[in-house]
Amino acid sequence: MAVNLKGRSLLSLADFTPFEIKYLVDLAADLKAKKRAGIRGKLLAGKNIALIFEKPSTRTRCAFTVACNDEGAFPEYLNKDDIQLGHKEDVKDTARVLGRMFDGIEFRGFKQSVVEELAKYSGVPVWNGLTDSDHPTQALADLLTLQENFGKLKGLNLVYLGDGRNNMSNALMLACAKMNINYTVSAPRELEPDADLIKKCEAIIAENSNKNFIKVINEPKEAVKAADAVYTDVWVSMGEEAKKHERYELLRPWQVNAELMNIALNSNDNCIFMHCLPAVKGAEVTEEVFEAHYSRVFDEAENRMHTIKAVMAATL
Ligand code: CP
Ligand code: NVA
Image 1 (cartoon, rainbow, N blue to C red):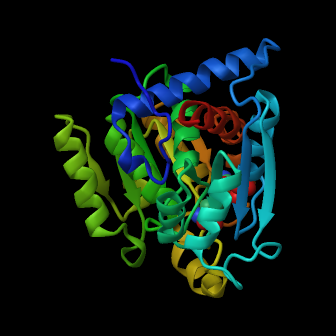
Image 2: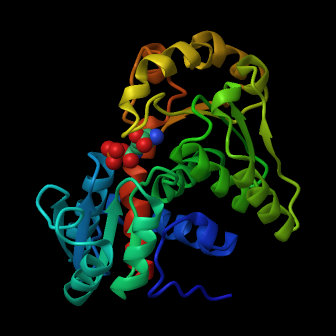
């Protein structure tokens, strides 16, 4: 079956079939091997790419920029303070203006509805570089990292600990549902994933006639048993800074530390640790785990670039 993603936006992995997702991961692996071999292409030659950022970013911004530079495109960084969007101009008008000039638009910000509106009105592919509710390009990089480690995706056990209702957990749940990976979230009751998202993911699993599961297990020591990968993210996401004190009180038992990793490693020697970064060491993860031989956090970071390159190449 041929895959043609030309003209498509990536707003959420929910909109992509398992076959399309696998295609993007494999294309990224191929582009990574080529870059390692010193081969640069012209997959994006002459394309102009707008990079809109309402929130800060290191990895996502750099991944888009380097991917553009590698393949002959011209990235333009548009910080929220420098453009009219959200001040004088609405999303619909900004979308139509940028769509007349650029070949593709990356958006990082607060509301998922904004990235959807940009896609609706710009007439060019729009890529979600993180919103309050989703982070699909990070989930793609994580799929590539899992595939590199285990040589497969199907049947793996990914266990996520911490804020179970944030963008990262949502994106991973969707990615796992699509790719036949078992997904366990361990979070306090107050931060459990949205019940509707779990239902949506279960429907995706049924639709693909798979048997993987989505589970919520509050008790962290129970959750990490048999994990192939233990994943965590910050306890306070961008935009939620006022909740810092409350979150740190609540989430302390979900810290990924050596004790917790030893439980996982005792049941599976090959278990790895993952984090989308940036990490707050001493909070959601200890320095010891972050730096351990089983930590794959910098592979994930590097893979942001290869997967984002694949997404742009496939959709432009
Ligand atoms: N993981 C990630 O999205 O990192 P940045 O916030 O640095 O882009
Ligand atoms: N959940 C985090 C992810 C950062 C990449 C945040 O939104 O801040």
